[in-house]
Length: 166
Image (cartoon, rainbow, N blue to C red; front, side):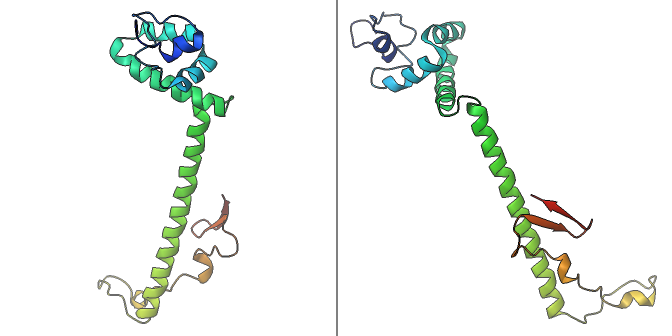
């Protein structure tokens, strides 16, 4: 920074901020926490080396990534941002399963409603099919419809006839 106030890194490290300070453009003095957390996790020397190896146009993105990873590492020292990503992927998986359950319940209710509205409506088949097929198909037994009132964590698979525990 030269003659102005030192950047956050030089303030924290208690050194004079040189005009060519590699940290100054990315760690302004008005946001000292940003550098403090990166320094705590990665160390000033390592961050300096990383930034020097990158082209100038990529350094801003690298600093944002370092701040994100350092913040995640402070929250979760073992997994860091991978822990956050895994948590979010698990949430997406659970929500997809809940969506599938809701969609299957809607389908089951629609099938029941269709059977109640048109209980004896004969199906139209081509002449090639035997007469026994002229009867409407039976509605699925209630046990094959999804019923989650008693146990929301178990899905009954009507096709294969076994439980899938979530």
